[in-house]
Image (cartoon, rainbow, N blue to C red):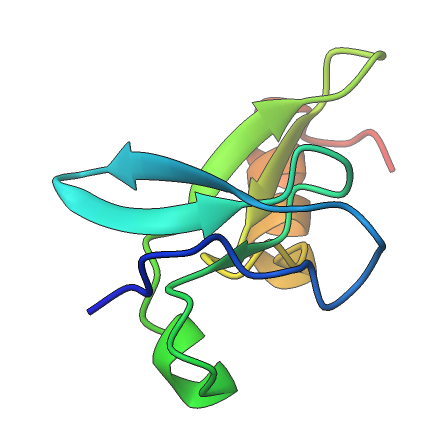
Amino acid sequence: MTSVTPPPCAACPAVMERITVEGEDHFRCPACEGRTYGTGDEDDDLDLPSYSDVDEDGAVIIYHGNGEIDFETTAELAAQDAPGEV
């Protein structure tokens, strides 16, 4: 269950905004892309759905639901897209 009032971002001074992803309400930081359910318990945020984005070079970056980069999955995806290029 998310809080009613958008919480402050834990990683930067921005105020989070309410969004709905895959039918679940949670909050996203417009500045650093961090996400939270807003319960105050960081363990709850581990269950947020993961998501992807494309950087300025066209590389796909996979994020854990809480907004942290999933380096392992991102690297695996990059290896599949460009075999032999490292």
